[in-house]
Image (cartoon, rainbow, N blue to C red; front, side, top):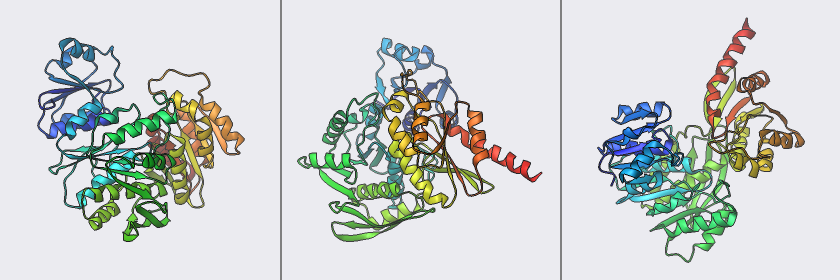
Length: 462
């Protein structure tokens, strides 16, 4: 189906662009459209894609298949034209499933850590002399691309549970990093989430790697033991088959020992900080082992991993004030990022500019956000990034601010981005960290903060 001309509606998104890039590498004619131009679109054009800015029915004229992102509404003129013309329309997940057919595919799922774990697995496999295909929801620093068409028989894909679309993949193997309620616009309860992950597990053909340190992961592991899968559990738990021990973390990375069913397999040194990344690396190692790859080469590959953009990404350092950017948008992720920052900052302060993502998530997790953000020394809250959702009564950054204030942490609710930047810059001293955090457009603030820090430094010198 994806061998003749394919048109992507919303081609600039991370998931859509990844699939488009692989098809271009396979020699398929690709066209697409998006609401606005971007660096991603420019790179796809360089590879030969014909992309229009704006959505118009005539854009799909040459297409034999249309792929549509989840953000596209049924009123979109290109989607309407495709349906009226009888052109097959696939979701992003359906098209990715088509790409994975014929490969030993590994789907990386879980509420947190998917992007980093998928990236780690790709880098580790490459160190084994294998050239895997991959499609990732973020960009590894090692490759500067979120997708690749390899010449090997392995295909690694990040599997998104947010709308249950990962149920269409039917992968050879899978990783589940954790199972925790999120995406409350789609999942009404923890039970529904667990049932969806169980359905995902039932779609796997050969092996499942799952973290049993996580309560939801452990519960799921116990429920799937009766299935005919090669089940590999990992974590610091004594019951884990692939067990983590001797963990040491620092500002520059992590060290830990891996034991496989009581036998020491090796010791791993990571170049990225954070205890959560120890778990992510172990998941990648477990999947590599399940694929029959050399453990020493996999461990060497993990030691070379350079991180992922927007995952505690250092944007710059001005007068010993470091500015990081992070995608964290769930309380558990916020806690992990601030814990990592605490290891890095040492005696300095952590100043977080946080932008809540979606009204539904903000309403559901306001207590959790307050608790996790209170681990910083100072918090500056922006308005909610709606991501297409309508506002919900009671969902407000100011509500989170009140809860943080009650916990004793300095906090400001500041809807003005300009003022928020000034608050962070004026508060920061040498050895402090400023972190822009969230899944929305808060990521654009990093360079502006660095510019203001540089201007402030010049002003002080004069």
